[in-house]
Image 1 (cartoon, one colour):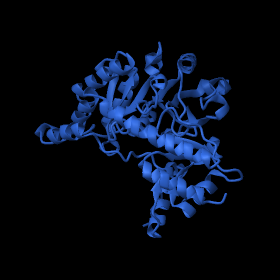
Image 2 (tube, rainbow, N blue to C red):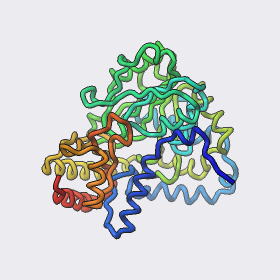
Image 3 (cartoon, rainbow, N blue to C red):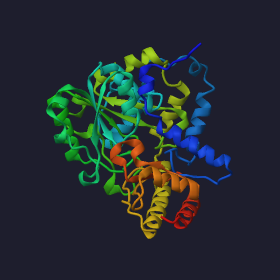
Image 4 (cartoon, one colour):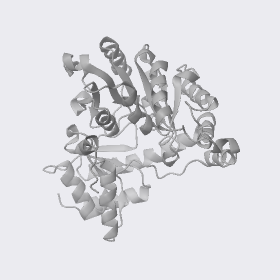
Amino acid sequence: MKIEFSEKLKKLPPYLFIEIDRKKNEAKARGADIISLGVGDPDLPTPDHIIKAMQTAVSKPQNHQYPFGAGMLSFRQAVCSWYKSRFDVVLEPEEVCALIGSKEGIGHIHLGFINPSDVVLIPEPGYPVYNTGTIFTDGEPFFMPLVEKNAYLPDLDAIPADIAKRAKLLFVNYPNNPTAAAANKDFYENLVSFARKNNIIVAADSAYSEIFYDEKDKPMSFLEIDGAKEVGVEFHSLSKTYNMTGWRIGWVAGNKDIIKGIATVKDNYDSGAFGAVQEAAIEALTSSQECVKKQRAIYKERRDVFTEGLKALGWQVNVPKATFYVWAKTPKGYTSAQTVSKLLDEAAIVSTPGNGMGKSGEGYVRFALTVNVDRIKEALARISKIKW
């Protein structure tokens, strides 16, 4: 029997991080001591109080049944409380839907609102799932370049009028992966105005909002803007904030009609987020946030050591104000792919090619600060020995 993939599957580019993992495993098989600065998977452990809450919750028989629906009322109420405390944003439980990680919701939103040939506005370089969902729904991607001269913000005025008219969904992601850029109030106000004028749903991906390095640079929420709930939703995740990537828990919040559309898709595709994980998430959101503060201090030390070290070696790099990513220009004369290959082949360092997340990322490499300071120092020592 001949097995053939669907045309949609054939259209997908290779999933970037799977390809990176493959190359990493090949290097390991050669006996290399890999320092992985590629995939943004925190190396820090989930805080103990969250684990203990999970241990208690998993013993409850009711959590062994299908969870179904938009999530436990108690979980959605915890999200509402967190938003009020963190951003002074008022939400109602019906404006929140639990997700099996924000990636799941970002992929599913297209199924609720995109018809064939509808345009989806996608930042690039950016998270590959924005485009994956577009391909699966036969939408038409229109990529918005994120370039340094625009502070890595999409130029909404540069979107052609005919494209804006056909667009149904627009993704933004701040603090940004991969560039580590942040968005300000002026940008979000302009975004709300643009979305309202063109009847476009805004999907704001805020997975990195709690990884910042100075109180004055504390990221804001898209939902803080007047009128934001009229035009969009915000995706959030506990993955990076509480080191819970493997737990698969997040949420989407905002416009209740958009939330209803996403929830309806989920009702037909999955059976909801595991109840015990939701209970652990409640503990994470409603207890002391001191663990998050301590984590930020750890990432700050790593950021400072790595960026200062790269600069001393002649690399051009902007010191990130948020996220645990460092967005660095490639050495002169090297492409993104060439730089990543050289780092892996000659220094056993895994990194991410900027162009793997969009053509505007060519000439850059992304490093994830997901190893300890000693390993970062070792990485710098190895990089110093490479002849560029």
